[in-house]
Image 1 (cartoon, rainbow, N blue to C red):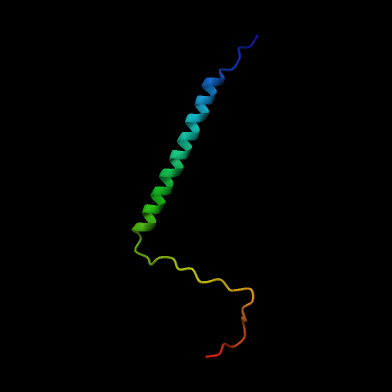
Image 2 (image 1 turned 90 degrees about the horizontal axis):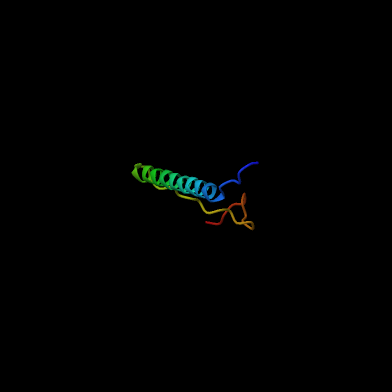
Length: 62
């Protein structure tokens, strides 16, 4: 006859592993943010998107 699994122990093992994974992701994000902030490059500038009704290709009036 087989012994029943110790669900409480399995739950805590899974919980600890998920906590460790969340902590690792958080630390990696912090390191990435610190690297970006330490770089001496200008900030990223996003251009305005084209509007669907824009007259792209037609000459603009000055």
